[in-house]
Image (cartoon, rainbow, N blue to C red):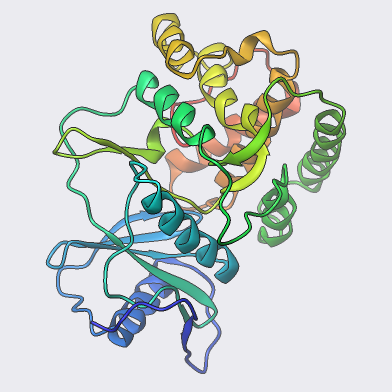
Length: 313
């Protein structure tokens, strides 16, 4: 395979692509060809904000994103974490990073076989404590955290008539309200490097028992409360974890976000972020549409307890 370098390598077709399961696989094939990586046995691992493909024959995970700059940041973050011997997924060696294929970034990562036991709330608290104790990187600059940067883009990109106009208008107004509330907050913890999408689903326990951090797209310099409020929301708003698990998270991290007055505003921001992420997938399946409608209904009616099923935050 070709030697890794910082500058993106570009391949293109004559037809612009949107990121769909079919186009993602096409980009996968073209990207792997650029680095002489065999694609036999390629398996789609996940399709959402990004597309992930397992390449079990060469023990590599290929990630196809939507933003070239975000992919470059992921490469930079991975190298920074590795330099600190931080428990995180590593870039695949000897592969150029990132590639750009039809405007989509392609990155290559070591494929880690998952262990039997899933990461716990305690694992998450300990991981975030260790991450938040790291000094800011000096070889590159992390962007400043933007609260709801993806929400407007997602709403703008929704197909016409996929949702009532009043629903979209409500979500735009709610985004503005949440941003105003957030801007007025006084934070209890110092600003610094944050993961940006920290929940147990972005941890992986390998067969060696080591828990590693994955998914670096949303890394930024921002309030640590953004990272740690997730588990508070999963406990207080959704009832997805028990009081004991939440207490274990707090003990491992060393701070209880529910004691901070701004926690509700952060949770509100995360809820609209979750909902607009789901809305992009309208029409994929009846269960997905039901889940989307449940989210939207609860936001429109300000349900005090969200009847949402556990999933990505």
